[in-house]
Length: 226
Image (cartoon, rainbow, N blue to C red):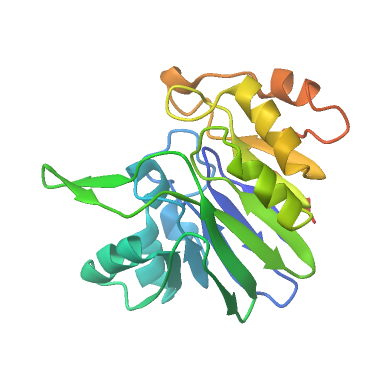
């Protein structure tokens, strides 16, 4: 599979059979995004939690592509109310086998709400995403603090690539993310959720230097093969 980083926490996947996934498509309001939401081709949109910088352009992308939204049940209910026709709701610890592979929602230490028309809408519990696709396991942590649950995840299944937030203020920072990476025992660790706003400015290279042999910085627009 090919994985492309679009800035903040947004990742797109192109699988060998042509299936396209996108995670947390915060694009139109992201000053660093390399693509427009109008350019996205996706069969599935996966969302970790209900904050605007992760829900992002989910509704527009799903409508434009007749794509299925996969997320916690409350987010699926919300996007359905906005006209998205295909959704699949999960809950923490639950997984499902989709045509492209298995998706499991994992625990995340964070919050989750979406502001619309001046009101805050409850969007369920925040989550991480564990994807088992094409014989590989990819972990997208969403927004989380370091927590002991990550050690359980690392014991459960060998993780090929882990995407971890390092921005601090809203999520764990670089030092805690190093600790999280060690708990997860992932083969490759890639930082996300940094430098989009002044309050989450970080040096990703300094972070990966603390994870010799496994840390990797992905530039915005860069694609890797897994």
